[in-house]
Length: 114
Length: 114
Image (cartoon, rainbow over all chains, first blue to last red; front, side):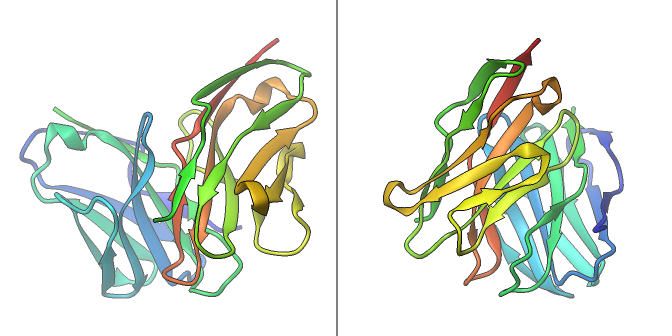
């Protein structure tokens, strides 16, 4: 069974803090993704990575950065958290391009920025 | 541009009734299509996927979906809904030939009355 874990289920931070969200997958997947989920907007892709140290911007990268130093771990960084970054953050992983497999999701981190 | 539309934000059905959740997509090539379910406080779980072949796809939990190219639709169905099916449902189209990205719809929240 594919397992994607996220470091925290709930997180409360203050405006201006630096925030790290960690994601780990155990299936040796090449691709990893960070989404944010907001009511009425569905899931929007923030960043994705198709290999170690490789990253590409998704649809809403502003205010975020990522790090992938090891294949199994993909971190989302909020350099200076703002209240409009209060959201549910979902991590996912998948095999490489051309596979008929799909994305597997972690349980999510609900981040509140005060 | 690729997009997914789920026209129903919220659907309420009685337990035992049939269910159909609508999904329309916009994509220039043959799409890869997915339905995911998200129970409260959880990540997304894959219900079913369509890559090629038979246009009627069977999934987990008694769900099925039918790909209709002429209507650009991939509607999800279940003949008899159970109270445990109450959740949010997301349709997604896969941009497989590019970067394995998924484009999600905004979701349909299903409420089930006893």
